[in-house]
Image 1 (cartoon, rainbow, N blue to C red):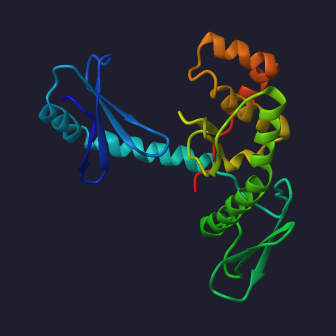
Image 2 (cartoon, rainbow, N blue to C red):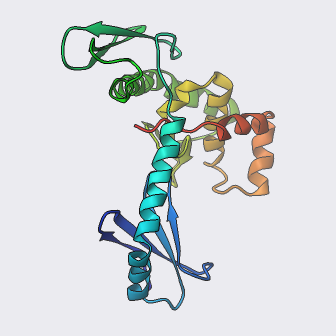
Image 3 (cartoon, helix red, strand yellow):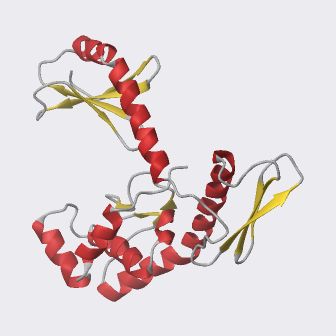
Length: 239
C-alpha cells in the first residue's frame, strides 16, 4: 500500500489505513475522537489490511464502547454551584416539555421540564451545550488579546488566532503560524492559559518538540512542568 486512504466498514464506520515504516505488524488504534486508524507495514497488501479489520470488527466495537464509557465517566456533572470565569450557572424548572438556555452578561440560565431530575443525562447534555457556548464567548473576548500581549512581550510574530472546540488538544500552531486555541482553556486559571499560548507561540520559531524547544520554553515559562501535570490530568469536555 503506497498511500493513506479510508474505507467504511459495517457497524464501525470509516477506517483510515496508513502506510508505516515502523510498524512490524498490522495494528488498529482507536483515537480520542473515535476515529479508527490502521498502521500498515511495508509489504502488506490492501486486501490483507481490509481482511484484518473484518476479522477484528468485534474487538473494534468493544474498544469503541470502552472509549465512550471512559469519556462519560470523565464528563462533568453540573449543578447550581458551577461557575465559569465570568458566568454563573442557574438551573430553572419550567412547565414546558422542552429544554432551553439563555446566556446573559454574567448568567447561564438553563430551563428544564419539572418532570426530569437535573442528574438526568438529557439535562446534563443541555447544560454542557450552554457551558461550551459560554466558554466560546469568553474565549473570543480574552484569548486573542492575550496572545497579542504575550507575543509582544516575548517578541513572537504570528498570523491569526482561531478559537475552536478541540476534542483532544489544548492548542496548536500551523505551518503558517496561525495559533489555534481550544475554547475550553477558559476552564483554567491564567497561568495554565499562558502556558498553552506561549507553547504555541514558541512553535512559530521551533516547529518540533526537540530539546531546544523545551529549553527555550523554560526560559519564558519557568513553571511549565507543573502546568503540564495539571493539563495531563484534564481532558476536554466531549460534546
